[in-house]
Image: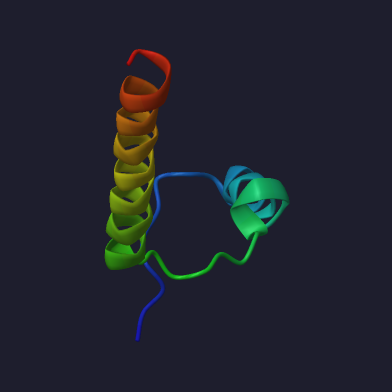
Length: 61
């Protein structure tokens, strides 16, 4: 398979490759899990709802 054609000079491409392979870009990340995010979001909403009910009943009368 051919190497992809770039518009950059080899020196510039080397700088780009070096930048991409360092720092934040080189950090291995876990897979994004939308269901886990929705679970935690729902849990926070339920907890805040229960807390607001408790405040309404016990503090506001």
